[in-house]
Image (cartoon, rainbow, N blue to C red; front, side, top):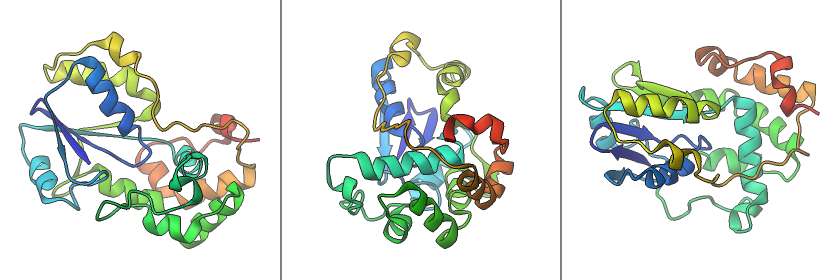
Amino acid sequence: MALLIDGKLLFIHTPRGGGEWFGKALRNMGVNETYRIGDKHSHGCYTREIFDLLKNPDIKSMTTIRHPAEWYKSHWELRTYRTDTIQNWGLYEKDFMWHPTWDLDNECKSFDFEDFINKCVDKFPSYLSRLYDDYTRKPPVGTLDYIILTKNLEKEIPDIFEENDMNFDLENFLNTPSHNSFKNDNIKYSVDLINKILQSEKRCIEKFNFSNNIEDLKYLIK
């Protein structure tokens, strides 16, 4: 899914990047001129209309991404803690033509977090690096105008809206409740396990300047 906001800003919904929350925050801010394009996680390499909008010099583009170690944990929590079929690793978004995590989910599904991570790095090395390439690409060879870390959303969104002359209600934005958040502080990486993610997603980590310092990631480690 992509959102064209006020005809000025195109938001590309990267999986587990806070896109559902962002859409809700837009409504809370009073931003009503929003046009949804494509399936839930369509991007410019998948949907022609999004591709054409990305080439429009009058429209800015953005997406949100999170650290790879956070992403894999968040995705596993989503697929094991939801109370519907997703909880049982059922087919996610089955009413759509396509979803970017179908292959990963089918091959790596597990109710054991460590087992899930080991399967991911073994069967789909650099999976998230490739996924982020697709969601941050701006044709022909560029990147989106704004690539925001989920943890920095509250800080950076006001500046982006101001730069693009868009009305913005900061208070309602900040008060938007979380969406699809299943954070469990009892689920942690071992040092060996998180190092596997850091190695598997080395290209992604370097490209987007994520930290590969274990000290910076202690909040994810048991």
